[in-house]
Length: 399
Image (cartoon, rainbow, N blue to C red; front, side, top):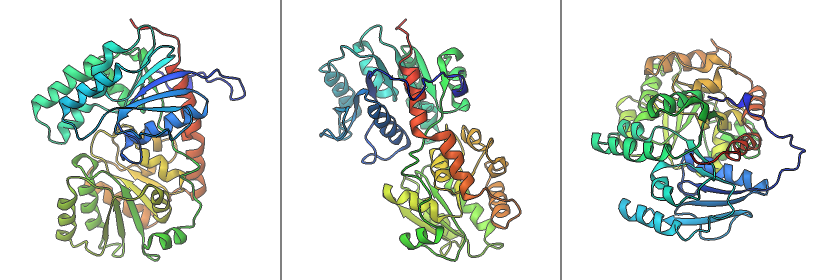
């Protein structure tokens, strides 16, 4: 696997010829919330700002031309059945002029499969591997047949056609290599990025709390999660009940929606946390940086399949330290900065122990300034996009 330190990037002052790049993803952020959608949203805008011409294909994309140099190509709609959607993806892709492309960048295996044989030959194909889709589905309760079909008939078929891969962490690079048999020299590790203009510490914690109507005099922890099984919010609630006797006024703000929301709300009641937990539901995107700034700590209690941890770098860019579990690519973010912020395990007891140590001052937490500087130095989307651009435009042809 090739790490970012090994990637040669042209000097920013050097003149770079604009390229024509075809991208295929999912929806468009923030109309379609999600980590993958946000990633593509930021990446395509950065490439377009470089004067590259981006043809972005996806589902439920905007009908209007919102950004210069980004051409939205809506291949299907989410209200179609899966088979109708795949047929629509293929039919509509046939109408696209794929001449004069310099690179192809795929982000989602399901919608890539119907168009593989339609892609122009001898144009390098880069796949951004955002996670093992089949395994993630299994963790969310999908049946064995569905998991098998996703892995062997969709993911593996698509990956065999790609020249190179970008992963957000060494952890996911290992999964791609070991579980999908992708040669290590085709895998490039480039972390996710953060928009440092949007996510920045421009309010004091008190000002941020006042804007959101949050408690001004209580220790606050914040998490922004899709409320599904693998993200560990249930473990965080249990951890909160363990902490409460020591820190009775602790308050947890949970942003996000998902199929476990009702079960988690009931769990909070059963644990006696009525006065210690607030389920915020969907948090408007413009409020997210304020929420990070309002918190003493952000917590990411993931139990499995966290390939990067976008919320970590967003929170750090806002000046707020993050506690995470030792899962996937998250330790790769925090270990060079502050390894004391990583819990010993994914258990509720170890999450509680780490939070207590930090909130009670037994472990010193990084300053607001150091959090911000680390995010700016390591995860600025402008720099990340240049690294991605270098990979997807590298010379190479279909084998």
